Amino acid sequence: MQPKDWTIRLEDMLEAADRVKSYTDGMDFEAFTANRMAVSAVMHEIQIIGEAARYVPAEVQARYPDVEWTAMRGMRNILVHVYGAVRLDIVCGVVEHRLPPLIPRLREILDLERAAEDD
Image (cartoon, rainbow, N blue to C red; front, side):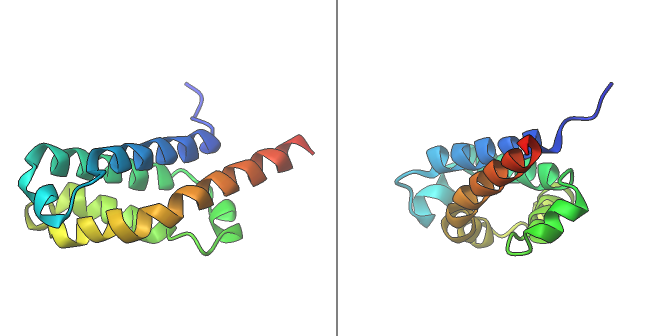
C-alpha cells in the first residue's frame, strides 16, 4: 500500500479543525465542559490533527516554523496516553486560541506547496 500523500494530511487537519469549530460554535467553557459528547468529539479531532502532523515531512515543517507542529503532536500524545488527566481548560484554550489562526495558515501552506509542485 502506498503511503498517503502528506498534503492530504493537511486536508485531514483542516477538516478536523473545521469539525471542532462546528462542535463548539456558540459554546462557552461551562457549556463545553458540561457536554460530554462535545468534549469527546473535540478531543478526538485534536488527536487527528496531531496524528496528521506527524506525516508532514520535516523539510516542509522547517519551511513553516511558525506552525506549532511539535505542539500539535504533543497534544495528541497527551490526549491519547494521559487521557485521564487532560485539563479541559487547556483543551478549550486550544479551541479558542490555537485553532482559529491555524486554519487559514494550513490552507495557505497547502496552496503554496501545491503551487510549488505544479512549477
